[in-house]
Length: 79
Image (cartoon, rainbow, N blue to C red; front, top):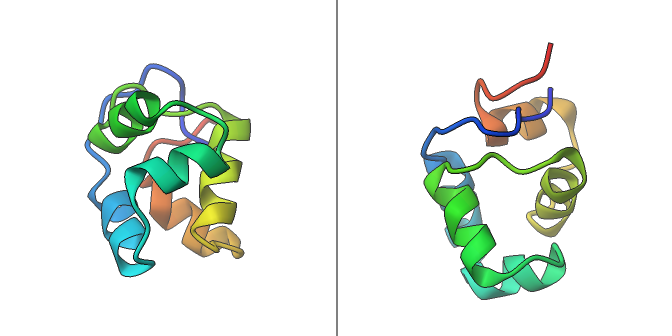
């Protein structure tokens, strides 16, 4: 259920979830230990984050359940 590296797909669900939580891109980036530019690129869909970064972003957005996590990353999953 994790995004594949190199996948390009604008992640509107990720942006919506961030905005609903009242968080900025900078805040998410800091909590995920990545640069603001890296987070912006992830939100724009290029590239999809690795497993560790995806998990840190999901934790920051308080996504705790598999179904919510999968919805956050859409069809960007590994087989």
